Length: 259
Image (cartoon, rainbow, N blue to C red; front, top):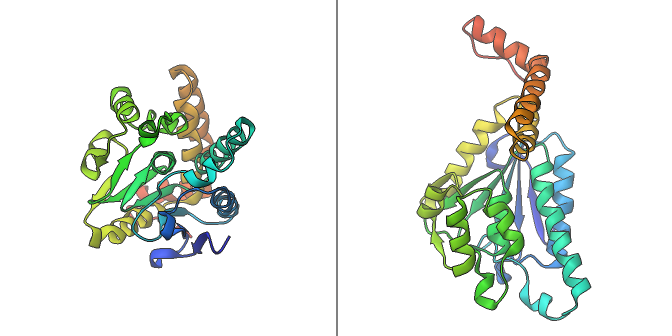
């Protein structure tokens, strides 16, 4: 795992920030079977730890170029493809289900399953020269699994246009459409990631974890069920020691004293 996924704890000089770096720069960090397995194991390990924030990055000139097409083409069997895409989906869902917010740090290209990876992350910060595409259609393969998170990040028509044209969009357009949160110049990308990660890491871990879980659950329900879930989450959150300290600090007009 250390070869394919580099793990840096207390990254960006911030306690509780874990940086996971896809480490196949010569292949633009393509998601080989081994990479998918290593990334899922790394995410599960971090999810079970006391980490507060995860930064997902790519080594070299690209964030991620999607699936490893050479590996895929070497075994053209339906059962193989079913298992491959199921494995990829499990890894993607791990990102959403883990308690820590996950920030994609994007440079270069993020294509096909690489763009899916950006869309599955809770937040994304992109270099101004980054480019995004779900370009499988250019090879005759509709990016069906990437369409799931993409259509939950950007508008339907914007998502469908990307899916049926395979065209790239730049970082500024990705931000306008909601695929990324912030855009920074290449030289300031890490500073932008550091600022966002530090802002989250400074908040109570329990509140952020509960909030993330609720955020995704309520999106998939009707509005009445969403309010019921949200009300229960807030009621439980109000009983946390960190929340009691935060509200008392507000009343006393002082900064909260969190661990």
